[in-house]
Image (cartoon, rainbow, N blue to C red; front, side, top):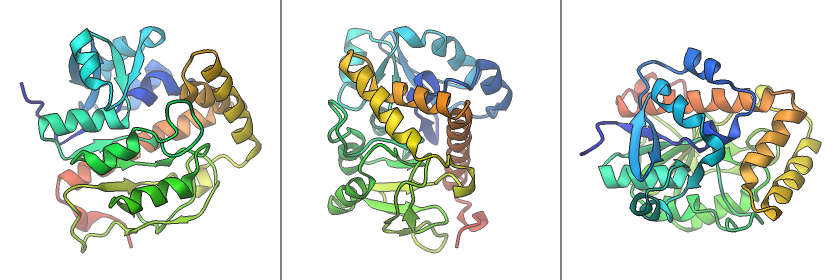
Length: 270
């Protein structure tokens, strides 16, 4: 049965990444009408709002992360897991949905199994546009943006022409252009970066090296890199990093709503 949504929202961050954002906070602040969250439970693709998602989140320790390359395997083998950006894009393509929504995305780096994160070939190969915040700071963001543009992906900034990092001011990379009401959007190979306002980001760049070390330790122990790095950021920032990312995801959902309502003329973009 087709999913009747204009866009779908990944759940990997909400499931494994936000240590200091409680279920109660999510229930109180997630828009009641926003029922575009998507995950896989016992091999079934499930969509719903925050009330439907919270019981799934409560099982986080037993849940895996599912990308575009492992989606079919998860469905066939009855696996339960949160969907990454690329996994969400794969579901969108199957259901004829044009937009997927994420927050921090993968890229090029030295994370085991993600030297080239599935998010990148997904943007090249899957005919779904992705709304995200930025590639994550521990990655090689210049190389990531370069790989995308070299492979025909249009990378537009919402209100800005450069990517300056994710949780930190960690880089300064020119994008293809700025999201505009007057320029038609390509039908595929499109990444829109709706970055966290610079004044809201973390200031201590030393957090990044600690987060990388803890992510690599988790990786060496057979765990997931990104949740461990997120937990380090959360601890070092007294929970600020989790709140920032949650607010960024909400902002990306709001942007997706505007894009799919064809209300570009209302955007406060230059």
